[in-house]
Image (cartoon, rainbow, N blue to C red; front, side, top):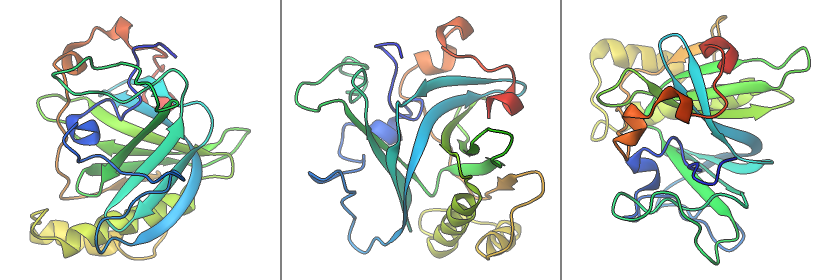
Length: 235
């Protein structure tokens, strides 16, 4: 990977803000829970970041090896190692820098008010299963997405995440405002039913994220490494 690549989810400010809003991990790299927060599941997965357009997708980064992913009733948080990546310092500091003493540890999170949809590609034909957690972003048609992959498939993970997001939004009207039709859809999403045949799950009531830097909106196409052929193939 390039030395100036971001380890975060396309670096929207809410995912790596320097004001204490990021995930906190203990010395064993376990997520430090917020008061009242409940762990729903823990996984070892491959992670990557994508930027999705109307007809194409760009893979913007990928962490080497498996990372520890924790699902709670409020968020998805992950932590892993990368010898070439480090914490983003925010808009007032160098955006991509190495910090001594971190040993390449990188982390980020997706809170349940953000995902707009889930795209699921089952495992098969030698390809791992892939789950894209897709968000909307302000002032752009491009969508940042976190990719989670595993050789054995991610269908169970997708159902777990779907239920967690739906339940959070239904039980937190102070965070997410829902119309009656949106509430009806989320009631279905909170159930234990199977995924749709096309593998795409909409999540009504999502809040858009905002990119940290103007460069993330207007970066030339050639600046993104590993451009995928199109959105379907990119997933």
